[in-house]
Image (cartoon, rainbow, N blue to C red):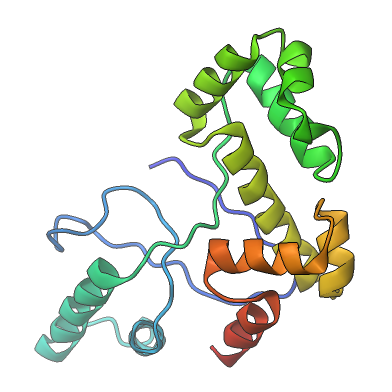
Amino acid sequence: MVHSLRSCGKISGWMVRLDTREGAGLPAEPRILALSPLLKEIIVRMMTWVANPEASTAKQRLVDVLHDEIRSASQTSLHLPLPRDPALKRMAASMAEDPSGISKDLVALARRAGLSERSLFRNFQKETGLSPGQWRRQMQVLRSLELLAKGRSVTETAFEVGYESVGAFIRAFRRALGVTPTEYFHKQRSF
């Protein structure tokens, strides 16, 4: 399955590849899952198997629990689908380059892409699964995670990604990720 992943700041983690034939009901496509404490500990235990890879019934039971945890884990919304159409791709790049500016005016973006506003909306949604507004908000959240991971303050980040107030940014962040920026990074550090 072709996929890509980009991260920023200091990170540590694991990539787990599973044979979906062994676990009925597992996702058929790559995804990023919210990491529960149990899921984390199962993976930590499995990493010790590198030194002793022989199969055992105890290991198989743990793999079965891993499958259960993956099936019940929620998918994080930390991805940003890109359109394939060159004009839409340019528009997305324009929104990403200037999250606080020109991208607010869909009519201007549509003109730049050589489309009517209605065609822009329809084609963008068809290719990404998101409206241009939803895509922009998702891009802002992802960009804010990068800035916050690099040590920027919540206030600096809010204005840099295009919010007119810190409160509006925090509300949007909470809507997208379920927690405030401060809670998000505190939770990440506790894992």
